[in-house]
Image (cartoon, rainbow, N blue to C red; front, side):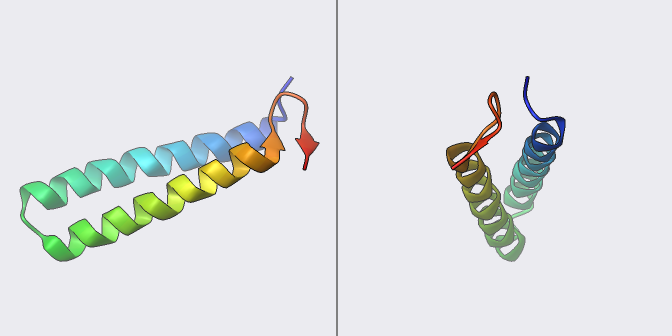
Length: 65
C-alpha cells in the first residue's frame, strides 16, 4: 500500500498543476502576457517536481532510491 503522506504530496502537486493550467488559460483569454508567462513557469516547475518524485520514490513499495 502506498504511503499516505506521499500520495497526499502527489495530490497536492496535481491540484496546483490544475489550478495553474486554469490560470494560464484565463491569462491567455485576457491577453495578459505577463501572467501567461508566469503560469507557464509555474507549470514547468510543478511538472518537474512531480516527475522528480515519481522517478525517485516508488509509491507502491515506498522504496527511496
